[in-house]
Image (cartoon, rainbow, N blue to C red; front, top):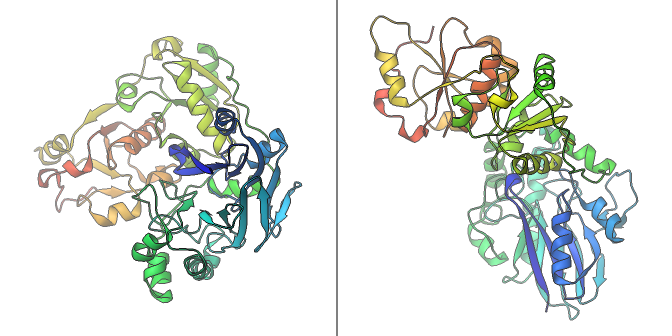
Length: 458
């Protein structure tokens, strides 16, 4: 019996797959931390014979090359991709056989020009599923603009043609197994389901329900910003990534932490934002460790800046280090565990005032004081969907380059959707010398009372 094992990476919104027949296995789109894949194969007593890439990924550093070399497997990559390593080149129509498994290669351009899907069949030719990578997703498709805006319309039209090809050539009951769509910015929109079939997608997916011009117009109109670190992923994957080094970074003492802060390096506090607000080293940045951590750190950090990780315990550092390795930030410069009292070299700790939208309303309408400066750091699409009148808007991912727009002569009240991004922004602003108030509340609770009305922030 052939089994398909999903290997989820929630922090990047991606999914890899191991398919096996009880003896041999193939792996599709593995993440860089290949120990998880090796563990799945070992638990099932199977030997990995082939590792396949659906495309040169733009949102993470692949583990495909390292995995193939580790286990001695063939590394399947589109023969038309310009890469700097030896691979087994595959193209449309090729069939790869391993034990009872057959992978039939289908060229599905759209997310990239050389994107491939792999149809999984058994020895008798029965279709068991299709690994669609960043092409046909659950209720969506991969975005077509990651190779440059100038290619977006062309790739969107290819995307529609590729989806219709799969729908035309595969049985309706065929399960689809995408790589993206579970939170990845590579997806045009995010998936709500955990599984789907060709027939199900034909009923709900815009790429199969709309005509070409309507689909393309809707796709292009809905594309927002994507993380800046994506610019580094494609080149890294084409060059052939080295295996991830997940050994613990060196431990920094108080003097070294101060030295790194004074040098302008990024010293990142992984504790949750409320603990950070209560007390932290001045100059450190709040990136509470969760599934959004790596995306936002990778999006904001000047590429190549040394990173030191602070956490309550070493296991949190290890988990954060694993996520950073997935996007090519290898080996944190240093680490420290415990709390700010242990990290401080005797200087006073910094803190952030936390507030609610009701607090903002009271501040806004108080007599005899200057109107507060309120900064919304949500994305453009979130802002357009609804915002408080009279507030300033700088999306978090643009804040570092626009700090000179934020006034220094009064407190800056900062908010996002739930508080996570606002805490990052607050720490960036505090490091730049601002007096900051963190609005630590769900934006859905912003009532009419908190609306700043017609008054201006000037």
